[in-house]
Image (cartoon, rainbow, N blue to C red; front, side, top):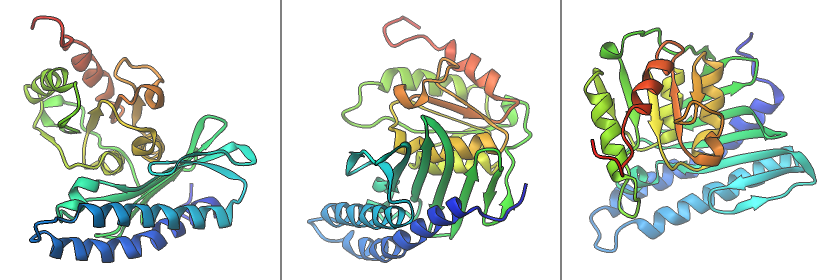
Length: 271
């Protein structure tokens, strides 16, 4: 396996880099807007749309027949119905909105309902994570491998915390309590795409979250699998994209983390 990018990965990385240039400039503007009463929300929404437009243009130029599943633009059916781009132009919008430099562009490619390739670009630190099925996972040309930690007490986990308008607060708190009790820490950084990329890079040992969208996960799933990790839904099955529930971890901890979270009572049950 070589760190030489395929034509497909080159297309994806090129699109991400082009969209990121304006996104980074806009991020600089957002930091100045924090002090205004109106706030930067509209500005960020426009930045999000502009990034998505660039990504759609660049990917369409290179592969004109492919379809799209876009966070903002919804589903676009291509004449090549086998291939579909799954795109999040700005994962970590709330971070971006608050001037926190932790956000990414995520591009996944699905072929015949199978996730084939993924690119996650974190432009602030110029970290380009990419993976293609059967070809391994890489960060800026360096081969990635999930961590080798085998004990829960040595491990660092990532998650997402539900917010206002979500009805899964109680089950999440039960899950968090279970993982807190046995691990060396839980982190919530606010970008599921980067959580998965960091897991692939061995920075985290496991990640779980409920209620995600396909564009939050598509690229990251390919990265984790190609780095030697396991990804399932919270029941240990394959319905990740359908349910929006994900559990990803290194090959040694996926089983124990799944067992731990499966034992957490449902919200309706008494503890």
